[in-house]
Image 1: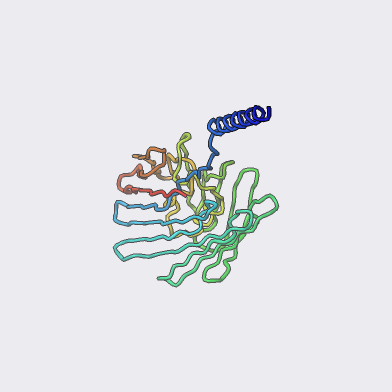
Image 2: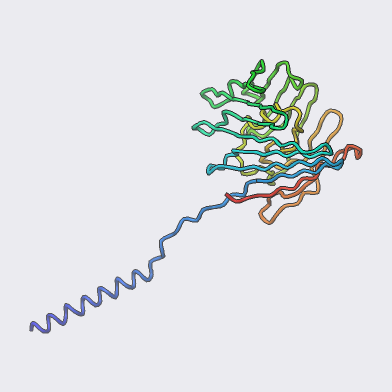
Length: 267
């Protein structure tokens, strides 16, 4: 009788083991999280039809925030390089943008303060440490920022849509308007664009304001002034829809085209 009981116990243990192994075999393997890589523009190159070439090289942090921009400008007179560093506060808002122009012994610093709604409450612009007197206004209902002072590019104004994408800009007596297209990706489609970036770039009035595509997430169709316009044409995209080449084509052929090429890096 004892032998029979022992035999039954062995059979039961074997059955349990078979069921357990069967369950292990049928159970799906634990999922390993896959990091989704995000393409960010790292090199934006421009070639003007009259010979000027510009190369912007950009880097980002782990939060996909733009942290540095190296700008190289080449003309028949030589090359000038500007180095830019962008700093953020603990909530991810831009607080300071420093630009160093070593060849001309210049430094431009722009600082931004914010109100409890995370809207820009004040802007300070410095050249070689000297604060430039300015008057700042913000219309939150219409997303319009204004800055006035004694510099040659003032007064300045920027209008944004509800998505913080630039729609219009005033530099001194010049008025610019942007028209975006459909739902296709812009050059900075994956960048959390902030008005502070576009405002800072406009303050460097001797740079062409359209060279960095206005940090636009949306695809652009036209850059228009009172007297002329550029169309964004001959667009080339990669298999994922990222814009890798296009031209700014003026309505006046004598103005010359500007050819863009963009390289992306996955972060």
